[in-house]
Length: 308
Length: 257
Image 1 (spheres, rainbow over the protein chains, first blue to last red):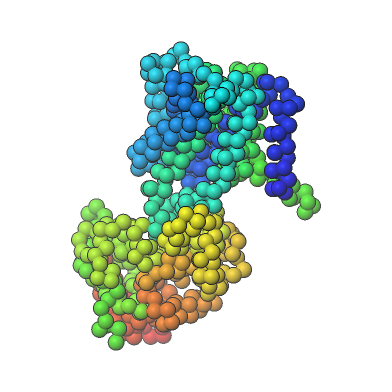
Image 2: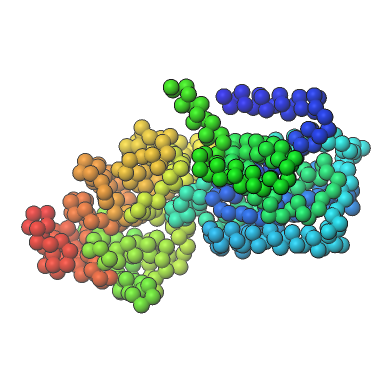
C-alpha cells in the first residue's frame, strides 16, 4: 500500500513537467513549498503538541534571507536556501526560548503576536525588505545554471521537498521524535522519564522554523517577487488548516493535506470573495466529521468497506 | 536488619505548604536499600504531596531530600531518571496515543546511547532484550503494539510500572499502584513487587490504600495523618498501634486485617 503510494507519487512528479503547461508546474512548485511548510507545522503541533502561529513569519524570514543572499550577494541557490533555513531557525530558537515558557492559548497568542510583529518588520524595514514595494528576487543561480522558468526550478524544488520529507521521517523515528511525542502526550510523565521538556519544545520549535525557512528558500527558486501581504496570519492559518485537514500527527497527513487543500484553495481563487468562507466551512466540516483528517477518514472507510 | 544499613533515600524535616495550608509538617523518613516501605494514611494526609516532593514536582518550604547521600532537594524533576529514581502516577500518566512498546522505550530514554546511530534508531537494538524482559515480566506480552489508551485499566497500571522499570531504577516510587485493581490483579502486583525487591534488590517506596497489599509486601510502614507522622514500624507494629487504628485503619481492619 505504502509502496504503491510512493510509486504513484514518483510517477506523477516525473510526468508533470512533461505533459503540462507552465501554470501547472508553477502550481506544483507552490504546493511542494507548502508541503515543506506543513511538515514544519507537523513537527511542532502534530508531533510535539505545541501551538505555533508564527509559521508565515519564519517562511518570510526564509524568503527574504534567501532572496537577498541570492540577489544581492549572488550566492549559489543551495547556499541561499540553507541561509534561509538557518536564519529562520536561529530566530525560531530565540523566540521559542521565550514563548515556550507559556502554554496553550498563551503560547498561541505569543507566537501570533510575533508573527504580526514580523509582518510589520517586513513591511517597514524598507532598506532591507523593500517595504511595501516588495522585493524583486533575481533568478536562482548555480555555477553557469540559471533558473528562469518554473520548469527550470521544478526538479530542484522536488529534490528539496523530498530531502525535507526524508529528514522529517528520520527525526520522527529517532529518539528526538520519541521525546516530541512524549511531551505531547504527557509533560509530567516525560519529565519523570528524564526527557528535558522545555529543551525538547524549543528544539521542536527551532526545527519547525528551519523547515519554514527552507520552504522560503524554495519559494525563491521559482518566484521573482515577494510582498509582505502574503506573509500574514492568513498564510499561517492556511498551513494549519492543511495539517488539520490532512490529519494531525501523521507525516502522510501533513503531505496529503498540503496537496489536497492546496488544490482546493487554488480552485477557489476564481472566487476570491468566497475563499475565506470556504476555508472556514471546510475546517468546520472536518472538525465535525473527520477530526483525524482526510486520510484517516478515507482509511477507515476503506477498511470498513473491505470488512463489510 | 535493614534499619542498620545506610538509607538509600532519606527525607529530613520536610515541610510543604500551599499558601497558608501546611500539607506536610516536619516529616522525616528513611528508606533502607532493598526494602519495601509503605506510606499510608487517610485521604489528605499529605502522602502524595510528599511523593511529588521526592520526585521533585513540588519544591519543599523546608527540609532536605537525600538520595544515596546526595542532596537532591534542588534538582529538577527531569534529573531523577538519570539518578535511578523512577515513579508511577496515581492518576495514570501514560503516553496514551503511543504503543506499549514505545511507552517503555521512552522510559529507557536515558539509556538509548549517545552515538548518532543510537540516537537515530527507532528501536535501539541494544535495548531490545531488556525491554522484552520487562514486557514479559509485567505480563504485557500480548499488547506490545497496542496503544496505551486501548488497554484495560489493570494493564495500564502495569504499563506504568513497566515504563518505570525501563529507567533501570534503584528507587521505585509507586503512587497507589493497586488502586482500582481487582483481587487477581493485586495478587500479581504483590508477587511482582516482592520479586523486584527480593531478587533484584530494588528499593520501593509506595503510597497505598489497599491494606491487603501493604501488609503483605512491606518491610516497614509509615503512617501520616494531617501532614505529620503518627507511627512507623513493621506491618504488625503499625496494625496494632492504637493511634493508627483510631486515625485510619478502624477497628475492623485491626482485628481481622
